[in-house]
View (cartoon, helix red, strand yellow):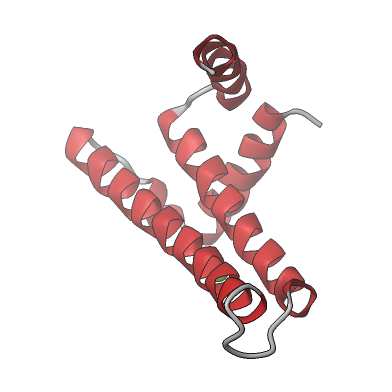
Length: 112
Ligand SMILES: [Mg+2]
C-alpha cells in the first residue's frame, strides 16, 4: 500500500467522523484547519518525547526504574498518532506525501 492510499483512507475516516472540520470555505478556514492539525501533531510528538524522556532519565541517568521495553508500546502508539495527523495534514493540503518524501530524501542525500 502506498502513502497516497493511506492519506485517502485517513481523510475518508476523518471526513466521516468530523464532517464539519472538512467544510473549508476559504483560505482562512484552511489556515485554521491546518493550525489545528499542526498543533495536534506537535502535541503527539510531545507525548512521544515525554515517554522517551522518562526512559532516558531512568535508564541513562539512573532516576527511576523505567526501561524502554516498559514503554515501547506506548511510544509506538504516540508515533502512530503523529503519523495519523501527518496523513491528515497531507490530505488537507492535497499534497503528494510520497513524492515530497523522495524529493526531500534526494535533497538530504546531497546535504549530508
Ligand atoms: Mg497520543
